[in-house]
Image (cartoon, rainbow, N blue to C red; front, side, top):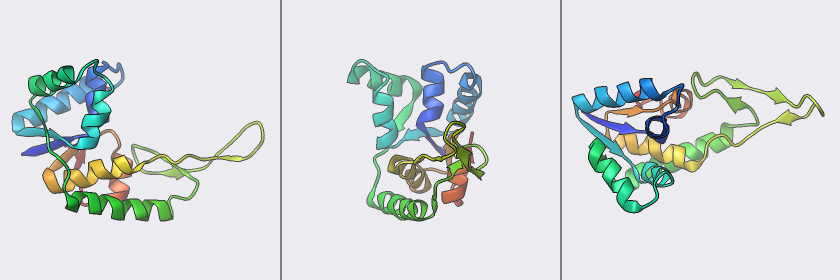
Length: 156
């Protein structure tokens, strides 16, 4: 089995996030026992910010058995398609990363709606890459992926 890994799962382990470290470590260990762990270009770039040198990143990937698999045109095109759908439908509501619920937030001082562009194109590339290069994606961003990538199996 090939498992793609999202940056948030790896950062939980790298920076020893007290809320998510144990679960993320268990997920990584379980999926590694079942087969290969992979990351896409975007995840690799996001991970690079955590290392002082390129050789340190390479050592981390080698030590963990995680393989960089470059994105291809199919994945990039699908990411663009889904991004277009998201941009068209996102509105001004915030979306819960766990369940996908959309909600409005109002400023307590001035009464104006607070909104954010929660997802950027890189999130879409990660998901589309996982569709074409793996059977499952490890991520804590399940609500978002469930909304825009229903065919993707996400574990987190």
